[in-house]
Length: 75
Image 1: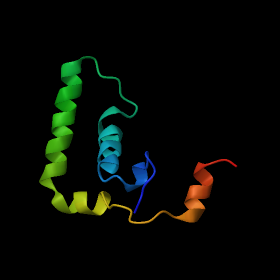
Image 2: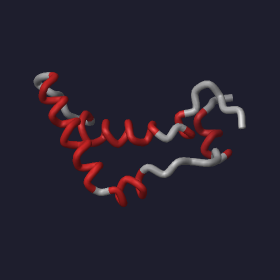
Image 3: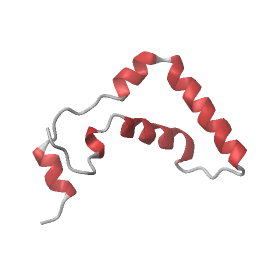
Image 4: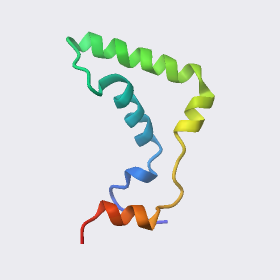
């Protein structure tokens, strides 16, 4: 199936990046790069410790909802 050049809803890694941003960078300013790296490593360890949570949270869309897509683009 041909996909548009940018289709984050169909890319399996996008939800993982979103999850990382929610856990590590949302509403938080890191004092140093080392602090950011440490928090990313801790988040990675937590994700890897619970494979069922990963499977539940990182489902991949296999189709686009036309009603949802209408909201994404203006006419």
